[in-house]
Every structure is written in C-alpha cells, then in structure tokens.
Image 1: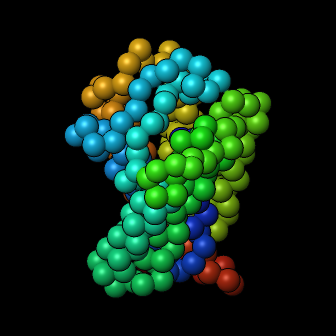
Image 2: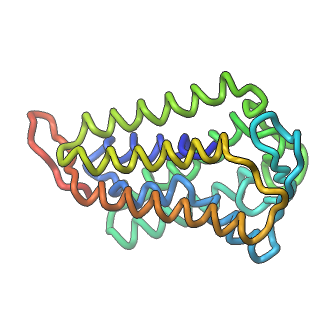
Length: 224
C-alpha cells in the first residue's frame, strides 16, 4: 500500500482541534517506511526484487524486523507520539500522531504477502491483497478519496492546494502500479521512494498550513 497509508493522516487531521497539522501526520503515516528505506540504504533491513512475489508488487520484503514488526511499529509510534507531545506541548496530538504511525502496520497487513511479524521473527502475517488487484486497487483508491473528502469537508481554506496534493498522490500511485518495476533493489530504488515521500509530505505541509478546521457552529479553528 502506498497512498492508502495517507488516508488515516487525512482523517486524523480533521478529527480534533488537538490533531497535528496535515504535514506532521503525513510523516506519521509513512514513518516506518521512511525508517525501512533508510535502514535498507545502510544494509540493516533488506528486500529483493522477485518477479511473482505478488501479482501487483514483485518485492520480497524478507528482513524488516525494526520497522515492519508489530513491536517495531509500536516503538516508532511511541517515539513519534512523544516527540509531538513534547515539541508541540500537545499530549493528545501526540497520541493521535502515534495512532497514525501504528495504522501503517494494520494497512500493510491487508495488502502484503505474509512478510510482517510480531517481533521480528516467524510466524509471519499478511492477507496478501496484492494478489487480488481488483480488490486492492479499489480499496486503496476508495479509502484515500473518502478520507481526502472528509478532510475537505471538515476544514476550510483554498481548494486548489488540496487538489494539487491529490493529483500528485494519484500520479505517483499510477507510476507505482503501472510503470515498469526495477530489475533489482538498491540505493536508486530506496532514494526514489524517500523522494516520493518527501514531495508528498511537503505538499501536505503546504495544504495544512492553509486550511483551518471547522468547529461546530461553522467557525474555523487553527490546527494545532
């Protein structure tokens, strides 16, 4: 899953007056993938290209105990929650951000082949919806669009910026699904993924800085 991970970020940004802004929540949504590709660059976590690994994604994610185990994801979520709580003096916002980080493991469990663990070693888990494109594609698009429009409905501000963000997300997702896959895993692939995350996070920050949450009664509240 790629842009589907940002659905919880959109929903959480519109959830409460204590929610962190959208850019912060975009970091939360893909934090464990930031960690994975960073650790892969250092040779700590590992993947390989294996045609047929799943029908949609030819990647064998065979060693990622620090980011994609449930215990590892909980640690990243707790760390992120603590940073937000202290940096923004917003414990509730920290908990919301931590929940978005943790959502990553749950969403990966839906789509990944059986490569997720509880604590870094077998047994492994994953429903494998990447083997069912007619299920995985509508699911990812549907949840992303539903969360995006929920965010628009619960916030007030310019519409052009969110539309640009959504267009960039859909374009990158189309490339992810339909462009030729790399022949091998390596630094170029990892840096490409990190660059995509950075672009979308920058756009989300731009959107979040220019939209205000709507309070009950129609008044707008500045995001935390």
